[in-house]
Length: 168
Ligand code: RP5
Image (cartoon, rainbow, N blue to C red):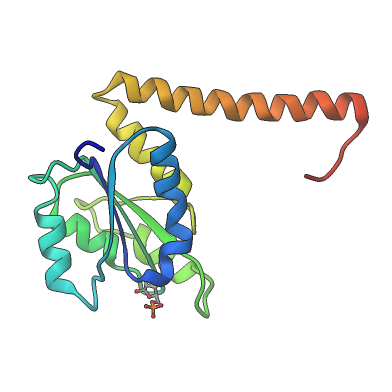
């Protein structure tokens, strides 16, 4: 595959089952990505290096996921002017509410575009939409993905109209 345009970074390998969905949708859309583990707390020097060199390495955006006192996306925003997408990871005693607030409540000047708790698929789609601003072919693929979603719901509605409702 060509050079990665998106970096998917997570605070722990225990986050991978959630983050897999971000890589899956980027693959569906034909967007090259790199994926790694890097912790704002356990590997602060590596985080500064990774995000500080991301733009020069050709990345267009980074997806940062962490749980609990989630500071990875904030650490990314502190070290790069690329768009940072934060994914609060659920779990822990506070079920991801802690990660949501830690990720979304950034100080003025350092935005993190935060998706839902465990919203990794949306993070991947948002990364694609960012790339699509300068690449209409990617934009067309994002629109095709939405169309597929629309057709799926319409097919269910048509089926329910004929046969009545049923759970998936
Ligand atoms: C966070 O702490 C990680 O992102 C993970 O969600 C959570 C627990 O990490 P592990 O103890 O499983 O490595 O930093």
